[in-house]
Length: 472
Image (cartoon, rainbow, N blue to C red):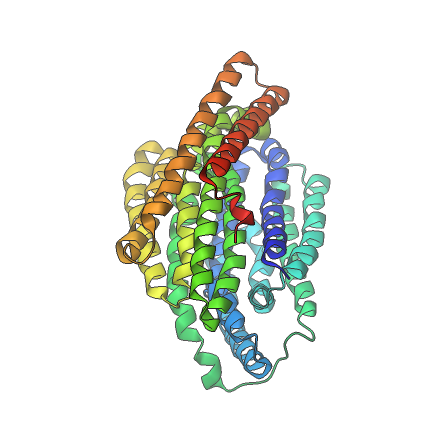
C-alpha cells in the first residue's frame, strides 16, 4: 500500500479514535459537570499509565523491528513470536498490579477504575505494532472504528447522571479489547506464531525497556499533569484542564499518525541503505507537519474563548483560556515528532529519544510543582509548554550538526507568520460578529481556513517547491 494511503488510513483512525471522546464531551460535561469529568479523568489517566507499562515501548520498538524484518518470512515469524511472548509476560504482570491499585489504592474513582480493567487486559492481545510494521494500516483503522462507534453510542443512551460514569469507562475499555481482538484476526497469513526460547524472548526486553523510559517520561508530562492538578488543585480544576487538553490531544493525533507511518517506511528504507530518499522524506515531512501544526496552534488561539463555552457548556468557559496557550505545544510536538520517527528511532539511536523526553519530564515536574499550587490548571499549561519546548531543544543540541536545522526552523518561522496573520483576521471577524453562536464561530473558522490556505498556496507557488505532500 502507498505511503499516502497509509497516512490517510492512520490519520483517519487516530483522529476518529481521539474525536469520539471529544464528540461525547459536550453531553458528558453537561450531565456530570466539572467534578464528574475530574473524577473520571483521574481514573482514566491512571488506567492509561498502567497500559503504557503493559505495552513497554512496543508502539515504537515493535513497529521498527517488524518493519526491518518483514522481507524475510522466517526472521519475521521469529521476531513476532519473541516480541509477543515478551508482551504477554510484561502485560500479565502489569495486570496483577492493576488489580492491586484498584482494590488497595484507588479512592473515590475506584468504581470507575474497576470497570476500566479491560484496558489492561487488552494489552495482552494488542498487535497494532505488528500490523503497522507490516504497512497494514487499513485493518487497524476499519476494525477499531466499528467497535468504538458502538461505545460512543452507549454514552448517549445509558449515561444520565454522575452515578453512570462507570458505564463510560466500561464501554471504552470493552471497545478497546474488542478492537484488539478483531485486529488479531488480520494477522492470519501475514505472520505465524512459533514458540521461541526464553532467551530469544528476553532479548527484546532491554531495547523495549529503553524506549519505555521515554514513554514513561512523556507520560509524566502528558498524563501526570492531570494527576497533579487533581491532587493539588482539586477535581474542578482537573475537569477544566481535562477538557482543554482533550481538544489539543485530538489535534495532535494528526502528528502521531503521520509519524507512525513514516517511521515504518523510513525504518525499512534504513535497512536498505536508501540515505538520499530518507533525507528527502524528512524535509518533505517537516514542511508538511509544521504547516499543519501552525494552522492548528494559531487557529485554536483565535477561537478557543468562544469554542469552549459553546462546546462544553458555560461551566467550562475557563477551558478556553487554558486551550489557547496549550495549542502552541502542537508546533513543538510536530517538530520533535519528525526528528524522532524519521531520524532517531529508525537509526536505533534511542538514547537521544530518552534524553530529550526525560529532560522534558524533569522540566514539567519542576514547573508543575512550583505553579499548580498557586495557579491551578494554568500552572499545568505552563509546565506542559516548557516541557514540550525542552524536547526539540535537546534534540537540536545533540543532532544540530547532522540535520539542516536552519531550514527546518525557517519552515517554523514562515508558517508562524502566516498563522499570526490568520489569527488577526479571525479576531477581526470575531469583532464584527460579537455574539457567541455556532454560526459566528463557523464564520470565524472558515475565514481562518481560507486566509491560511491562500497564504500557503501563494508561498508554495512563489518558492517553486509545490505542495509538501506531492513532492518527491
